Image (cartoon, rainbow, N blue to C red; front, side, top):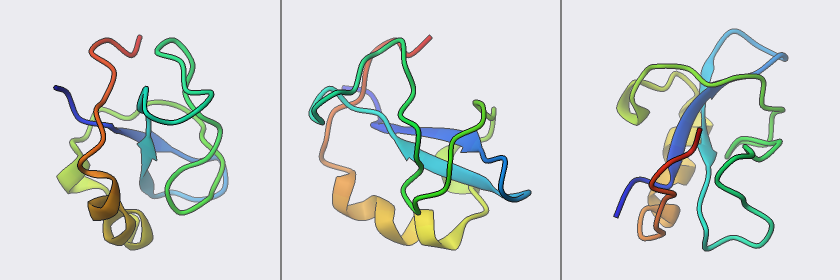
Length: 76
């Protein structure tokens, strides 16, 4: 199983955020990133940092309740 989290940037601030990207959520597709992050800001583009290095504290505090969900094996 892979992680359900993807690190992204947002056009609304300079922080990195977490995005939930999982086949367990309705409407999630491997080739399309969801439009909003865990904290609710808009998604801009992928960022190469790992989930533990994300700067948004709201995303980090929200993430544990989704850790049991599967991720997509390939997201690009």
